Amino acid sequence: MPVSMTRQRGVALLVSSLAAASLLTACNSSSSSDSTDASAINVAQVTGSVAEDHWREYVTVVPDGTTSLHVRLHNLSADADLYVWEYSTANSCWSSNPGTNDDVCEFDSPGAGDWGIEVEGWDPGTTSYTLTVTLQPSDKEATLEFVDDGSWGGLPLVNRR
Image (cartoon, rainbow, N blue to C red; front, top):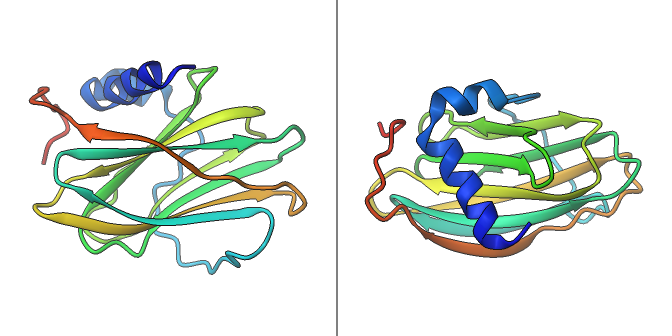
């Protein structure tokens, strides 16, 4: 799916929370304190930052035979939220824990192909973060590539705190 279409899907999830809630599947938005070996082949990790009312989008490629996809937004300096979606289906997750608590999305038996991951900035100033993707089984190679960033540009945000 082209980048412009992925941006539209992310905005659709953000703007229409009731519709998005019906699409959310396998989303674990509890805080996670597990440690991850960032040097393992099945783990991809980036650090970044996002400003208030801005987003940063990444893509990960899930290989055939993957039994689980675990996406974790952690080491937050302020509040940010996590949105994950499969480009080819409506399979998605939105995790919005308050403050600097981790946001986590997990998918059992995820579809093979491209998955979008978006980090949304909520607090004033700039929020730094670490984004980690882990695949199972451990022989599956995880990737994480920056795609795009931007701001909401005055869109009405029904989920705005």
